[in-house]
Image 1 (cartoon, rainbow, N blue to C red):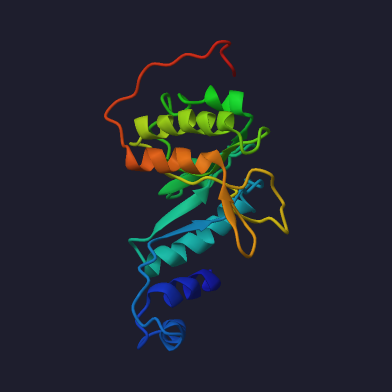
Image 2: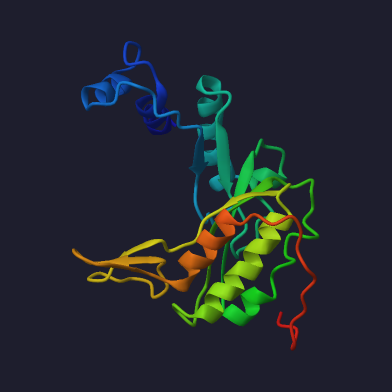
Length: 217
């Protein structure tokens, strides 16, 4: 909890009142960074009371005491059962973080995932998603676009999203479907980049009914 407070103080506090904010100022940035969102945990698997929920509570209570307007993202739905999640057992959760990695044809069938989302659950940050298995293909980019249209249609609950993995040095590749790939002199992007750029600059007024044949699940 103290480490998290120190991080927030470094980013936001008055240099005259905080050791870490003074360090920020000495490093050339006296103004606050205005950091207003942090995530506590990531893909947490252990949801019993002694593990993630108790650590989440320990950290968030301290953060909200000092920064009451801070938005805190919780580890969300990414595979294992989440019945013991602090978001489901009475603790405050502003947003939780959903992750999806699927084959392109499966992701293309997921455009309606949030249509029936239980609106009593926390709002959603889709913090990681990608159509994997056909890396770099136009088919994958189209599948991701269909999936993202579902985010836009359900913007009352899906407040933000981010593709992952994002950046890759081609001399040290870990994943095969990174959006931005570079070496010391060159950069290339997946088709997914152009899909997202197009959607970011062309916000639609409505979406059209679409069906898949066969209906992938």
